[in-house]
Picture (cartoon, rainbow, N blue to C red):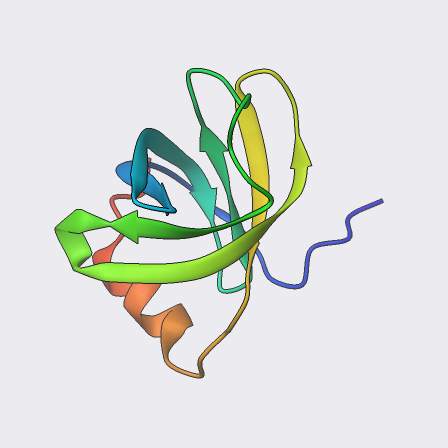
Length: 95
């Protein structure tokens, strides 16, 4: 049963997980107004709350982990703005 608040789009975007002065590279695999799935080399050491940085777009989005496995984590954005859906659509490289 689908529990997502918004439809996700499949993408392949480099991003970074930022927390406590540390940065971990990741890849955004799908994204929506409310959250995303991230590929990581290892989910070990990634905190439950962090900022997702999308350098190509100059965006930093506070978020929290909803689920995780060895090399992928699902996140929900802490804030959803009214224009976030338009910005995602305009800037994403959809596969």
